[in-house]
Image (cartoon, rainbow, N blue to C red; front, side, top):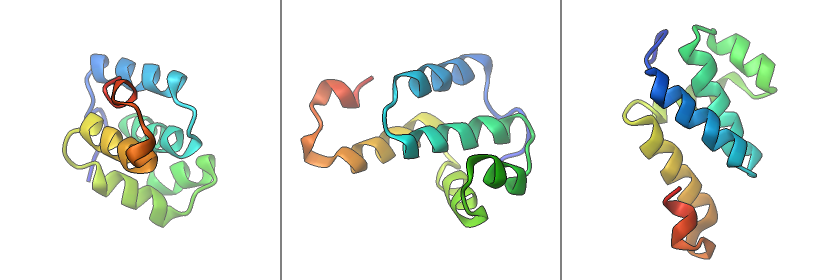
Length: 91
């Protein structure tokens, strides 16, 4: 799983920008979990701060072992499904 500083500055800024635009709080929580883990927060501390179960945080981070943006985009697409206009999925 991820340790500290696995994101570069551009990735961090992109995640922060996506967080500002996002309306789904579940996606926002996933983004925050990734950003906090990047800062070196423990799984327990992230779960407590975001009011999530430890298992939910671990699952989010494990699913995110590849490309952080690919994971979050897939998560967003699966949430919206067929209702999403293509322009929303390409943000």
